[in-house]
Image 1 (cartoon, rainbow, N blue to C red):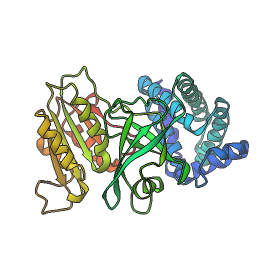
Image 2 (cartoon, one colour):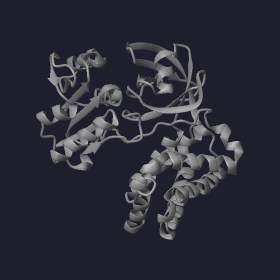
Image 3 (cartoon, rainbow, N blue to C red):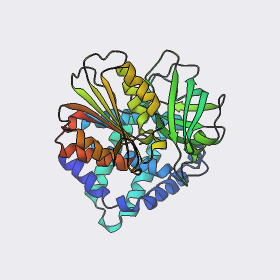
Image 4 (cartoon, rainbow, N blue to C red):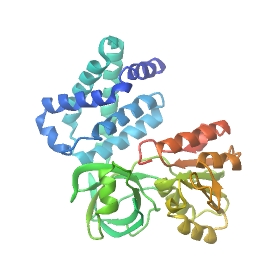
Length: 372
């Protein structure tokens, strides 16, 4: 297994810097092999290739961790049901993937790499198909938007109710969302911002980045109560370990607060013994949109504390600086369960800070495949 994992990671370095070419070749070959597959994808393919490559990278990086590898790929297979992917499509995708890898890597590609990827894709597709086949839920749920509140020029909080069938999720997980009225066949993942409830209502915190984020832009600026969304199967492992007795550190940046808020809500239903420390950071005070709601939770639960921080406002009446640096000032956190959610940059910085604080990796949970 160690040699196999090394071959996958080593060969990935040959194509990693040319992802655009890799994804372009993959899709061109895929649609040439089966033109009918083009109907399953959005008219504008920008970003779709990145999601494919993210799945490939994650698979190659977790193949030497069989338990995580299995869990992730089964979840990915369940999630891909929303694209109407059938078992026969996996063989076609495998041919297109191998062609794309060989073409992008060039002369440095060898037979060992080729066989490793063939074996890896066989395992990947088998686990994905098994996950899809074993899932009793529908490929996706229809959800009606109940409320929509703009909490900033580029941020909104909205709720929706899953219709027809209960949607089972755990606090800390994320789901894929589609807005068929405005952007059919375009999906993006968003963390659920509340704990499961009997009303089957999910809350989302959405921020649209400048100059990008078509789906986020639609959710922030165009969606209104009464609109219908589509919601795919929940994914993610940033969930609570109820058997743990360790206190909890939760670090959130911007709309990365969503899964942290859900975790706190779940803890509120049973926690009596664990201290929970939430660090909530943003660039400017106006971006701390959820601070009033968090302070209400603090008043209701004596085991909860919230520390806000701003990185770009020297007049902010609170902690100043990057949230990863603020967390370090309050450490050490070696005896805590740690949850981290935010932008990729913020997550990386916080993970580095926790590593320097000698927090065991097994005590840290974060998701790399969600909307961070």
